Length: 159
Image (cartoon, rainbow, N blue to C red; front, side, top):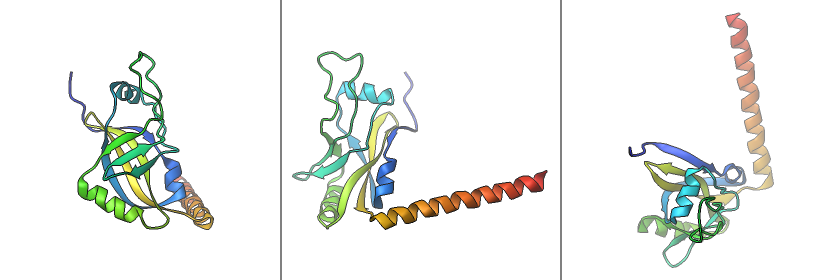
């Protein structure tokens, strides 16, 4: 069987980008059971309620939902179990010191396969206030309207 190349996205946490200011991102490996890998290869996972907790110089991923593998037997995994993240010691130390500051948290942004290995993109983030969220939405809407106006002008010029 040929070795996989490239990046295949499994799940994305769009809500995290809406609710938090992303300060720094890291790529981490995951310690998974065999049935979890098979379930992820089917493209089934949810990062919505997930968070990362640092415990004794180890990073743990909590509340990420990887559904049970349909073909699994008694060896199946539990859907919301905590999973160990594989990070370098200096990355864990940086995350630990930064997450101690008030308002900072570590959230998962994306779960994907990179060259056949399961990886997760985590971010050091700071919570947004309600007015920040409204401002972000307003900017996004303004960008859309600008793009629509530009494309309408281009269509008129081509006709």
